[in-house]
Image (cartoon, rainbow, N blue to C red; front, side, top):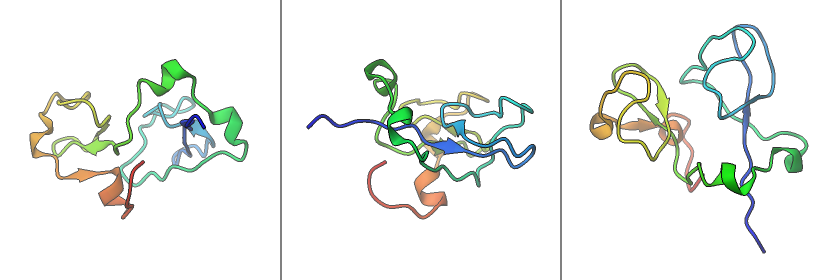
Length: 105
């Protein structure tokens, strides 16, 4: 059976926009960034959130890491912060550790 990758959603705490796709780190409605406390969730219609093979190839099974300098979440496969350019070497926190999650993502 082929494994499918599902994209999670998040809600903007500033303007209450709901169901923003996880790939977006800012709200498409008000432009505010999602915070480090943002929780992701699965949509009610899982099949609609299924990523294409091309989209899935751009993701990993590891949690996003949090930049120690600017508190920006970064994909697990990048070595420098995409916002400020700081190296990942000092990063001690990631989405899983901040939200007390265990296992693979």
